[in-house]
Image: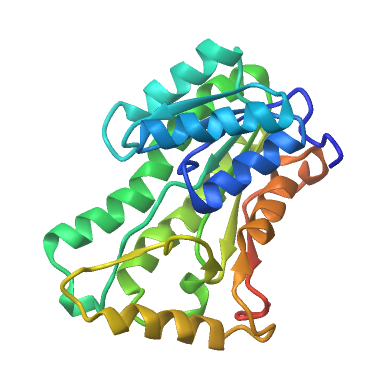
Length: 259
């Protein structure tokens, strides 16, 4: 590792497992102090403890539902109280219900929008002011390549993730001249211990398997993305090297969508 984030503090949401955990661990390996945020307090504390043990750095856990009003501000305040400043925000928290559009209910629609769009919007709005005060910030979202490739049964999920992609161009126009950058990493299907979006339990179990198979069929490289693939892209956009990159969607997709 190269200490690309030495002296920086990063907040990573959805970091108790999967992609978020991989990002938090990669950041710590690159010298960052890390706030590990997620829904499950025990998971977040375990990840933070593992980071401290493996890298000798500083890490704390934070538990809360970031789609709820006030939770993003509590996360921001906890990070500032512990570390004094935040240089990097990674909006990874998400997850939704994957169903054909007409099979969604009001509850599954709301859950999918809340978990993906509202968490990202609220956290971004909470962290912009202290970053503006310091004149520095890297804000990176984890979006979805399905927004571009139109993967089966993803229309509602894509509505939420498409909003995540779009908001960053608007924020970039407003705040990039003041030292902040806003970008999104959009992975294709990622091989991890849990699906990125949870299938509705009333649907047939075979449906999600079929969607996964179709997602991998779309990838010319012939494999799913890995957590490490995604973490490397997020790290780049969070680093000094990406200082002139803002308002962009970086696809980590093995070629499933091109140009």
